[in-house]
Length: 209
Image (tube, rainbow, N blue to C red; front, side):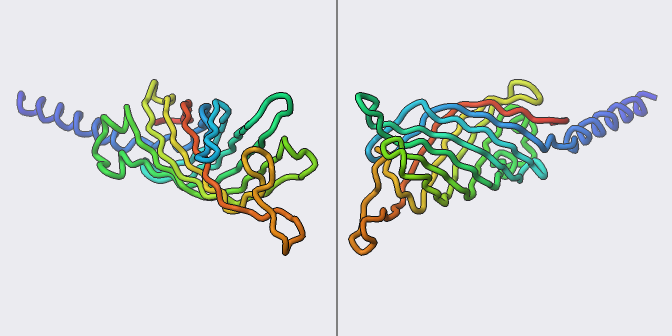
């Protein structure tokens, strides 16, 4: 009889642990972040970045993310304001490195996850310095790391470090044209630039984690 009770308890524990291991992953999340925008040259940085996005994880390791972000760069605020306002839309692949390295790490995946994301997108910039200059439309490459710490089963707080490479930017960060070329009769030529964001934010997952 004692052997049977132990056997039943063992089977119950085994089934419970299997159920936890196979719980449906809460695939859909909303993320929102706020923090620093910066560039290497001319060394601008300010607490002016905001982004939010929607993330869908196909399983506990791989997913996709659609996000929108805003940045503001100012080289002068008085007597005349100079700089640019930028916004972007990005489509990215996401991988949970915590589960990718060790899918059996149940404790860590419930309390801490390290997400990596990378993709491409479309940026729009408006010059404050040259208001009549129109909108600069730019393709970009984006990549970053996002460690997240669980507060509850559905809510996590995270840090994010992201880099964005603009492939052909026509306004510099002071709002002036990057440079002009005589053969194009004074029209601005594009140049590649790099923007970084350091943010803190929240991620809410719908459904069962």
